Length: 407
Image (cartoon, rainbow, N blue to C red; front, side, top):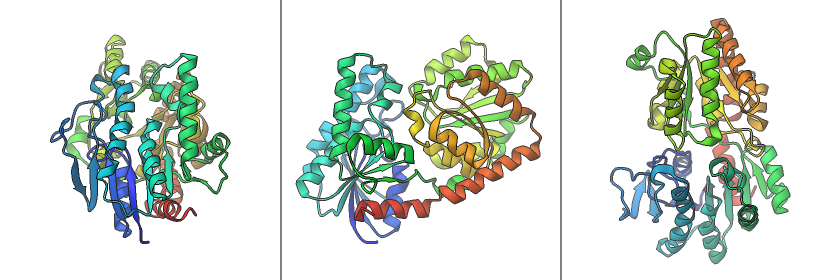
């Protein structure tokens, strides 16, 4: 497939986001790609090595030309700095549009939070009369409320109006699930032909186990429940930690929660672990490069995915679930909606309602007591579901065709 795409996304390499692999896939398929993005500081809010408020402003990534715009860093992940981060990058990115060389056939936004991220893409597409496709990964303003406790009715009304307006201005929208597709059609008045349901695919490397003898020796003798990814209030990991301790007290004495990642909730979770005297029940490992995640899924007895009980978070299937299934390990899910349905349909693990601490603890006890052969069967079903639904090549082709042709 031939074409030239402008990718707009605040978060890009060297930050760990799936858009990095999508860009690589576009290039592998013969497309020409430019990327407009921010300066890497996610999730800790500190500039990555080699970056600062002074740039660099232009780089190359695997053959793509990368143009960076300023942003207010998330320092400390305080509410004020997150808000300033959300509003600053779209403004700076819009000012940077004049630096782009042009000649694009389409504009594509990988729209994690904030929804404002797509505004520079809209401006560029409208000015140059080219189609704009917005991949809606975090539904706004609903996702905002899972991170920042906005209660003021006036501010909530403004956030709703701005979000709906930006979604309506896209020529095409991509949803991660059919329930989200239906919601976006209702909110924008667009037809299902204009709103495609395309799940987040899983990079191929997640399906290849990596054995790390030193890592496995470190966590040997435990039943390792592994969580990978960003730690925010949306993951309800405080509830998970309490459920793990409940299960240990009820007989799962070797149950161990291994948290691999970072984010705005890490410090509060560590404080909670100290308060609860969690001891060796939990390990905060920190962030690792995405390609090292299979070392941790390989040693896992089970993989954990959890979300808060916001009904709007249940509209999507998190991309994390695809990578878990690719690892071929049992999944323990505490969530509602589309993600819960995917785990149940695949038969790959045990599911409980979001934020139901007792139900999660009960499932942890069940899995802990389950014969190894039964757990292996759950893992095999996870792998089979991944191969049927989340393979990279097929979903990447669907993305490319919809972005460039609207089909």
